[in-house]
Length: 115
Length: 116
Image (cartoon, rainbow over all chains, first blue to last red; front, top):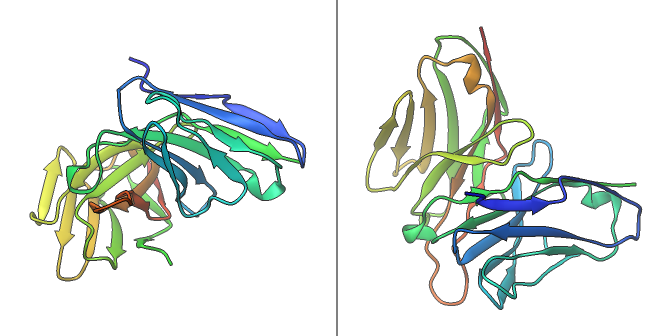
């Protein structure tokens, strides 16, 4: 039972480089999310998706892009890496939201450093 | 604007003591209030959650107290153990109608250390 799988676990990027953070879930959840976690700042929502082909911006979308071509996968793209994007990134998924909300399952995280 | 405010930022408790973490929210539309526990190097995991139609929920040593009129909720950890040392996040979400999605708004986290 894999749950939410994120790759890679660690990455060092140079300023201006691009990369894609991969996220896959095997629970047939419609809802998927990308958060970033900075020390003392909690979890900030970057992008989310309510199903294949549907995505929307969260609180801090600048510098990122996402796509959702399948229910299982929700990759996060950084086009021009900047030091401000140094963070730990978490992908999550859930069955429902709000009053229908059930547990959000998180991946193990990707620690990204931009130098 | 921080939708969910959490305090304290860090907490040190002796083994066997009670750990209390508090959260406050503004949006009365929130209808789901979970607490997540995160160990170093791991993703957050759901610990316990409550809906606003009850004032308290208990699961083992963990209890959520909910005060709807004050728009506050808190996590109590009874008989705290060194294995409880982790970062705790409160969160809130709401059911959105239409095209927007109800999503989790997280507090900034509380780093709990339980001394043996």
